[in-house]
Image 1 (cartoon, rainbow, N blue to C red):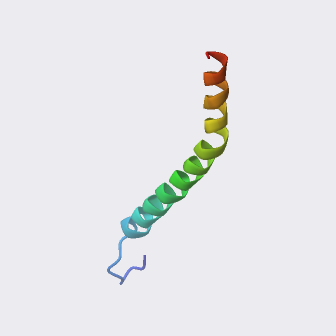
Image 2 (tube, rainbow, N blue to C red):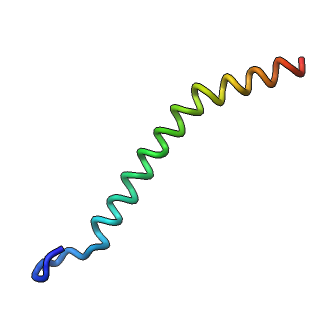
Length: 48
């Protein structure tokens, strides 16, 4: 990050990718457990 440092720009970018993957996974799981489960139950009720 600095001209004399040993850390390249790839390290913070890599950390950002990993952290954003965890955050997006959490958002998807929360959405899947609420909205998508309800939609799935409604679809299954229509075909009973």
